[in-house]
Length: 60
Image (tube, rainbow, N blue to C red):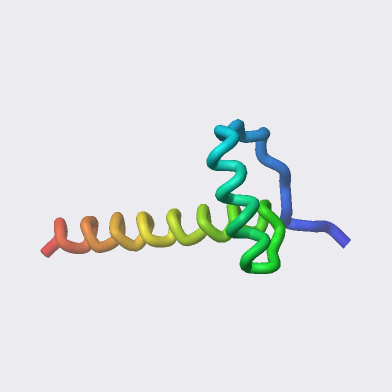
């Protein structure tokens, strides 16, 4: 069975930011990696949708 997952390079964050991520992940009963993936997914989706709207408006 092959997986569609891959590993990205490590990302360095400040100590305070790491603590915030850890606290939030614990409050959601999730791993920090899940929180990061979810945040990135939501960010990209929001910006891809905004880009699509701009492209659509340009053709009107």
